Picture 1 (cartoon, helix red, strand yellow):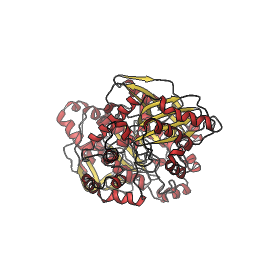
Picture 2 (cartoon, rainbow over the protein chains, first blue to last red; picture 1 turned 60 degrees about the horizontal axis):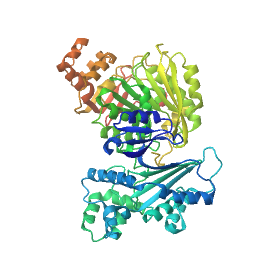
Picture 3 (cartoon, rainbow over the protein chains, first blue to last red; picture 1 turned 30 degrees about the vertical axis):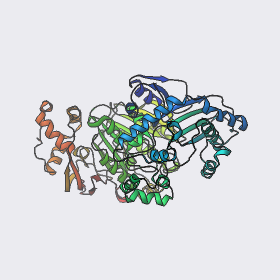
Picture 4 (cartoon, each protein chain N blue to C red; picture 1 turned 45 degrees about the vertical axis):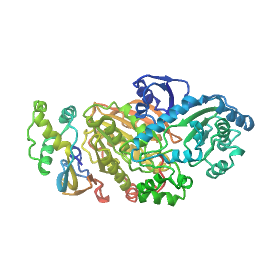
Length: 492
Length: 122
């Protein structure tokens, strides 16, 4: 019976629960509501668990503590004691199973550089656990209380792990020392921020702590990890040279530029990064797991046209096609060239699953026939990395008007995600005759609270004059691409 | 772009009342085999503008689509195969879509139609 934690966007747990209920031999453990995710035990093989569509990621569950001390000294001592309270046996067993599954997937690799490396440093050790190196990544959030007495780093680092502390301090975003100290003491594993094979995650929200162990360490199978690090240690090893050649110039150059080789970032090593269509991203790409979650609300039927008028890199229509295959047709559009190019690349990559077409258009003046679409699922721009508030307050109501026009009266359903104060008014007041609001709730994504509206199209025929003329300023802005700031990194 | 998408696209230049169906000009077509789903085809059939679909199929060189269809034909496997091929397997990769009223050309590159309008058209 493996004990897991599956994470998802806060507010979309219902999709995850629904999926888990259909997973054989699974019992859901309720009780942790602060975090976006679900705790469960299952007897299903890990391949089945890895197929969960609504999960951002899955972790081995270590511990959950309520009312943790918040002042520094007691807090740090408490964290240090945590490691010894955990039953590591089954957890490491699970970790091993997942790593082995990953191994068998990557057939091109003759040996895992990580294992080779550790094998050489610990040649005589037979006990598996001692071959590990680890890191603890902490994440500390204050929602309702003032401040913790310790920083994220204090949680992770101690004097004994000084080099670790230096790295963390530089990054200023990770916590996890005290827990790391405890683990080090218990297992004798060395801590290593860069070439680790066990990552422990500590999520602290107010006085609650959730301790998890990462099971997925590489985003896609081509991502070879830690080659340069291991080369320092096992230079005479013959496998190594051939492996680096296999890697090809591109990745080698990339790693050189960065000046270091890391595990792929956490954002990359997610369950959803394995979707076949996830090849190219725009910097505010929606998570496929979130797309799946909101797709659940749309009650998609066979033969439906699923439209996303502002599709970014095409995640929503492509997730619909990937999930429902040839039963539906996905249609996505955007007006930014980079988004269209990303969508195109992704749609070619995901082509085998189901049909999905990409069109470049302006969502406030959709070039689609009236009443031609069955489902609209749209993640409208929000946050401050994609457009700005002022522009969106103008844009979003225009898009809603277009959605009203293209949806089939009587049967059409739209799921709209937005962070706009005027959206609700637009739906329940201005479009009252055409849309009936079925559901309105919030989803927490990347620290933002986003509105989700589920609306049904009424039988009322759409007004003929729905195409509204955007202001000259808007048109100019769009043409200049001012909606999206170029070349910022991606939020996965 | 598949012909199913073509069946939904319309020109939305300001003042245009008959922006559908768009004419097709092609310099490169591609046929990509895909799984036939009879259920999908039966559901999508009543949603199509058949006349526009028939004309579009002819303009990309698929001539075996009848101009008149009855719902009973959806039980015929042979017809479904032809229907599926024209609707979902033929891709317009390079070419243009042309507004029937104004003659405005919307270029299609790498299978993606660009339906963005110029400032004076909105």
